Structures are given as C-alpha cells and as structure tokens.
Length: 116
Length: 109
Image (cartoon, rainbow over all chains, first blue to last red; front, side, top):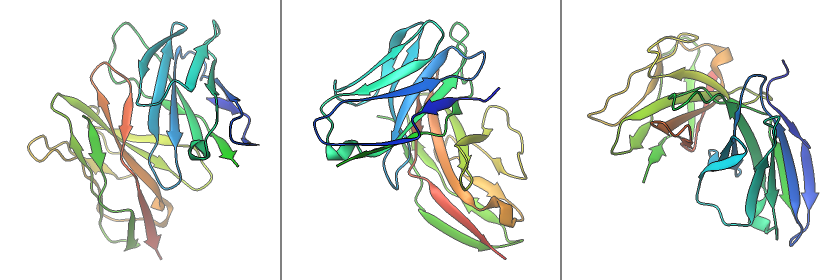
C-alpha cells in the first residue's frame, strides 16, 4: 500500500487561473480531508468528503470546491487563483464507521502550488 | 472557536537533555488531542493521541483539562528527534483537525 498519494507534486499557475489537485486515499479508507498549509504555518482545514458529499467545511471561500469519486479518490479545485493561494495542499484520508470517533488521519506528501 | 497555540516556533536542546514542547488549546467541549510530527523530507504522521495514553519513541503527553494543555515530553532527547512537531485538536465526531503553528525541534549533538 503506497498510502495516500497526491498529484501533481508541484505546479505553477498565474493569478486568475484555475487548478485541480488530486488525491488517492490509503487502501480501505473512505474519507478524504483537504488542508492548506501556508509557509511557516500549521495546516488549515479546507473541507472533508465522505460518501461523495462534502461533510464539513472550514473557513474558505467558494472558490475552493471539491469532489469525491466512487472509488473514494478526491479532487480539490480552486478557481480565480490569488497570490495568497500559494501554499502546500495536503490531503488526508481516514475511515469513517458510522460516527466512530478519532480515527487517525493519514497524510499525503502534498502538492506545492505557486501562484505568480 | 477552536484554537491550538504552540508558543515556541523554535526549540533547541542538547542530546540527552529533557525536552518539552508546549501546546495549549481553546475548546469548550471534550476535545481529542494529537501530536503530529514531520521529519525532514517526510510526510506528516501521527506521533501520539491522548486517548491511547501510550508512549511513542519515548514521548508522552498528558491532557490537562484544567490548564487546557497537552504538552509533549521526552526525558532524554535524541538527535533523530529533530523535526517539526504539530499539536492538533479534533472536535468529537468531526474528524476535522485544528493545528497549531508548529514547533521546530533541533537536537544538538
């Protein structure tokens, strides 16, 4: 099991463009969360997907959207990119069993997005 | 609002010395607290969680609800402990993690 995988590793975009980041969860996991980590900061929760629906959302604008596919993989889309969107985007997967608590989240290596 | 504070951005200790990384949280309910670690060129990984009350790599952390703290401790630091450490809080049932800013720990030989 390769664990959580993310693609691409890094990319460079210009202001106003749109970007799609991809994540494949760890085998057996059904829940995907996305985090944004700006330089020198801890990760900030963007949103979480379970059963192909957004289950929770952090304090991020609607320019940030996502999707989860039947195979549990997920995409993060960011529209109208701003310079401040430059960050490391982390994907984490976990397993939801009903309302089980505190399941460990496994993180991917991240996608480094640079907006010029 | 939930918040996690790690007051030290950088911490440097000598090998063999005790180490304590501070973490304070703000949450009115019953939190779950975690410590995540990121070694150089590796991904973020779970170090320990307060629910399991176990010691990992010699590290322990006790949840103090009165002081709303979850400090990470190790009695004798080793060079391989050098890494970035993040304290995180999860709201019961939410699986969403709220992270602190992190503390970069350097163990000097």
